[in-house]
Length: 211
Length: 179
Image (cartoon, rainbow over all chains, first blue to last red; front, side, top):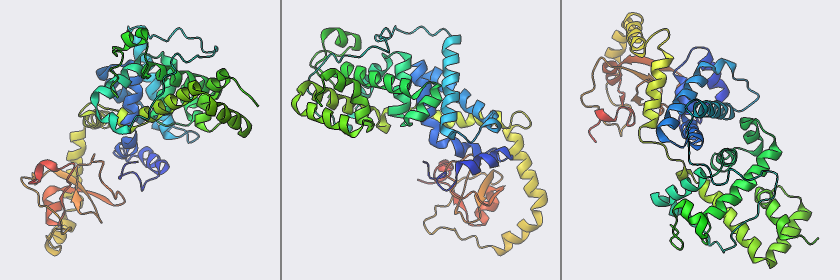
């Protein structure tokens, strides 16, 4: 949480914003700006669309702050608004993306890992390299929407299983099933021993992993 | 209880979440000790979670926050009063309501900086409206996200803020600092 917010409890901030101290809204959203952008990006997969959707979501949150009920966390509510905004935009603009390579997977069936090569531990310093971050982002982009959304909320934004379910309007059981698949699919996509098919789709050349 | 690889894969995510019961956990761990394939799946999945969970994976475009705040400011006060209008109104309020108080405060308060590490501002427009907090040392634009104490904010002209010993915020008033 940002320095400016740590002394403030969100409930108090929200009440004061409702009472007319509008500028406190900046304080309220500051810890979530990155998360809102990343959520929009996870759906739209385009920087400028994601930025526009994130701005619109923040505006809607401000306009409808009076409707926020304290039964959910503000962050979950904000992410819900962002998801709705990004999905609506995607439908409206008929964003034609490359067909996700794993969209055809059946959620109910068991996912069978394709690769069993050993993974050595990848140091987090590897993420300093833009090339590595781009490869990871490409792999994430190739997942179907329902898997990507769950993965982004749970594993990148660290929402709990319950908060993820609430934000997406699905059951916790579905969150767990999709999360398992998303994680295993990403593992296969990024595995050091990629086979020819996967590597061609991700433009990873065999044996030239970024780590 | 002996379990098969398929069962390990099915539960691997729950295992990493710490959401399997102790009996299943023990069975999985026993299986993992003797199965290289499942160990590879577990290690790889753990790596995936750790890499993507790193803050560095969330990149926002340069200037995102600034543009967001700008758009919010336009809309927040746009309906009833523009952001500029709000600033002008705030200035007017200070001039009318605070005139007497200001006259006395300027003469009685020391212009010494409130912080011994303070850097005086350079080229600060004297009539620019800024906000200060009673216990703070710096003056800010109203939208600055680095205002630590919002308990008693006042909106005053930069000239008055400087007369009271406030110095420019190193974040939102960076352009008015020497270095």
